View: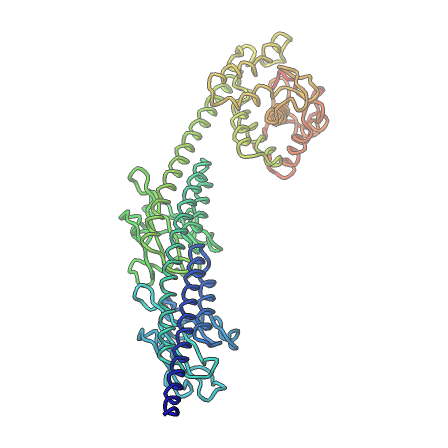
Length: 573
């Protein structure tokens, strides 16, 4: 009887041991699952890269299934391929990054059917297309990865450490891990999308400030296109503007190596995707341009660029379509309707910036034209100085080219050169039109013209920066000029530039009582007076411009004769 009791106790203890092992294993799996949520969930929230999360997922998978080899495949929808995204085990280096047809092999079968699969002998498995294995009875288990009920990949493991075949229990664990992965990746994608949107809108705000920081149309256009690639994560982008006279679109800005070639391309309104958007004023997002009836390959043919997908929106100003913006080839995916909405917001900012720049340019051109007309009207009073203002303007720009002036200073120089003699409007005709040298009293009156000019311009606050160049262009480096007797750096640079240009023109212009100097003789005089009457640096810049052929508009009326007093007096300027 005792023997029978002993026999009964042993199976019971054995069963208890098995149950204990099963419980320990279950607790171990639960620990791994908790660790997955804790670590991978944390990585997702922190915005870790997908590759980082996938690698850790495979580490946890191999640990839970008790195997050392496995592969995580992802489906590439654009190529219909399975990519070896993460590979663990002896063949990792060889297989990582490879691709195969989405329906090929055991992984392809699982991806196609959306059902898990266990193979007890892959060498004899009809779906197996891999390399020959060293184990006679190598076995494999694979489960699909889902995102929003759609298969996006496959997890595949091979050969347990204890060489036992995979069981239904193992399959249950792997399916559970795959489910956790799907939840975590959805969370990661959500956080990445939210983070991306925040960055996009932040960039949009920065771009808005950037666009509005300048009123230069060309700068606005280029900044707009450079910002497109950043905001839209596009390979390239382009801005096409409407030529209303011809009823066409032309590439104003096209990024990329072949941008210059695209400048030669024109599209009729209604032609191609951009032409359609320009005609109907409606935005488009196209996932595969080759399947869109509006797509024309002539632009790609010209640029030797392959367009895959595109988002294209109209640029409107006060209800009028002035152009089209394109973002081409989304990096790491395809454009969405959300991208299109964001692009429309960006388009609105570009439209406002372009319109502001256009209005500014129109105002600036009008003002310059008015200033030039005023200067020309003053010149009409002195028939012997016709074209003087235009020549001084050209000389000043030639000098500026070699002084590397900032754009703002260049604008000030342009207006200062045009208006430098506006004060002569206050000089009597008898003095201004005199065909002989001025006497002492007349010279004193003539010397008042810079001050008269300053008095006129001070009533226009927007021209306050123009006054110094005009007021002090008769000052000398040695302090013997007028009106204040300023020296060296006391004289504004703009005034020093005008002084050289003004004097050169005076020397080379013929007057009733003397002939103009040949250009070479005038250059020689400038050299002699550099450091005394003129700024050395400015003179050197003018000489460089002269020898490089940048000085144009030189008076045709000159003589090669040497003058007794070659450098004109201040009263003659």
